[in-house]
Image 1: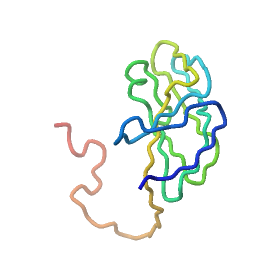
Image 2: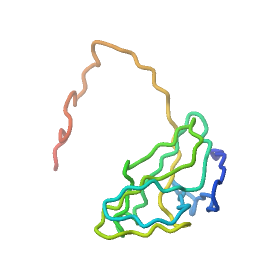
Image 3: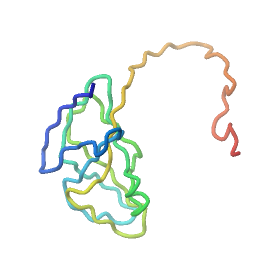
Image 4: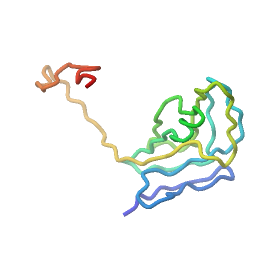
Amino acid sequence: MALKVKIKKVADVKTPFYVHKGDSGVDLYSAEDYLLKPMERKLIATGIKIAVPYGYEAQVRPKSGLAIEHGISHANSVGTIDSCYRGEIKVPLINLSGKPYKIEKGRKIAQMVFAKVEEAVFDEVDDLGETSRNEGGFGSTGMD
């Protein structure tokens, strides 16, 4: 059964949809034109608001084609839309290339994936138990 998500358009934009059966995400489209200068960050409106069901989040992710072909990514890598948020979805784009990039209204700027989340209850303890890794951090598994 599909997850039902309410959507409200606040601009004349495409409704997100799955292009292929089995796709993980839907595309988000720009609701505005903007010339993004090299190394500039800008919140770009998508023209939609959604109501994510409780127990889920919407993850807003970069588009691989924009990253590879134009050096465009997201300033926060993956953004989270919480189930209690009702504002317009905006994408913090960053231009990592040396050339300006023209964002055009109606063009893809991100993708959105829905994921189940659990609410945590924290239990403060004196001992966390042993593992094979313990406190091994960055690089603890080696490079080979």
